Length: 279
Image (cartoon, rainbow, N blue to C red; front, side, top):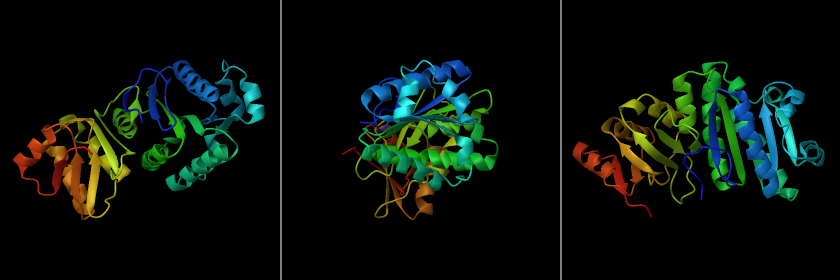
């Protein structure tokens, strides 16, 4: 089972978990990285750390992990500069790098791959944001089905609030939820994505952007969303969902345990959206 919602540290995460960590204090973020990776090493995962800048400087961020140097010599711990991956602006190409690394870790006897990355330095233009947001959802889809877990760091001092809201919304877990909702991959059979939290007037600008980047696709003419953790959705955001379904010529189905979404759908007489009980 994947975790979703707000977390206070980077401990206790499983092999399918994906965490967004916004920070203002780099030392505090490094402590989260160390606890996330040290726990991964103890559990038998290959772990990795990535960020912009030289590998020698990035390796210093891991001071404090027991036997970090020995772990690097054995190949248990790898440090990579994102500057060396500059040719992978394509989010699909970037995902293939992580997928191959996960497969290699499994082939070499590890339980999977766990990666922490400070990706703030990649966000130098709106084009980069579009690529990174799409990658976050693609990697989340991969994580939901494979033993690949990740901690993604974003420096709040360098990013505006809408950017932070969008990126946190595309993760199942975060240390803060600036968007108020979550749109991420689902491991539940038949569901193309999971939608949780609250979608209200404050979400009306971020939700269409998140939906565009995640771009959940229908199966058999039905775009089924796991809404088990959806607390509230208003008419504006339901209309946004309906429009997304029409673009893909599909009916939108919300699998929601609460009556709220069904009531709003009934009042608005939205023929493009149905609400079902979770299976």
